[in-house]
Image (tube, rainbow, N blue to C red; front, side, top):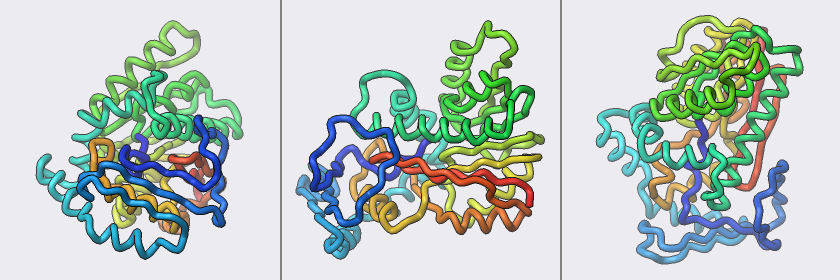
Length: 313
């Protein structure tokens, strides 16, 4: 399940003082800190149709002042009350209903996507590619049991199955699971020596069993660090040999973009987003006897994901 929707609003346009590109760059994008960053927001309800323009690092104070005018936390509380629960219920409701339609389009192959959505699609595909490389570096996946926790529409589960892995995949959204099942049957049915993944509707807390490898991509953004520690411990308890996690890295720049995005409420940004430092993730793994063996990073203009592969210490 991807996370960039919680950080970026369709009302927000990000540009630099260099020329703009008509197509997002699928290669890793490194921000030159000396370049000015311009953020424009047009027609945002929060500002009664006014335009916010923030230029360069000297305007951090202006951004902070603008942030103080909005109340994203209150908006999240109202969302939780509407569905009768906290973060988990909001996530389930969003990705089962309105959010599902948006992410089905982003995860699909339709041309009916905007620049931000296409960039997110490219970024997530690169994360899946990086994870598959991590997994196959150790040898064949044939017969290896893999738990794909938070499988979304099956974008990792399907290539895992193609490599011969025995995949158990789950997602909190029934709509996502149904879409993943459909895509898996279309891609895998009738292929020799390929087992279609077993999909189920489940939150992470309810997962059980033992697997050679557990993978959880782009899901920790829905967990504050206090709960992420427990979730990492739970996922580690399911893994015999490997645990692969991806998460939105907590840096000054990404945290700033997150706060800017929170200024502009909209249907594309309906869940709370939590960033995590790699040090916090590493400490959580160490607490339960695991250590990071490999690290990776996927970044595009609007998508960023830190990947870690952990093994027993």
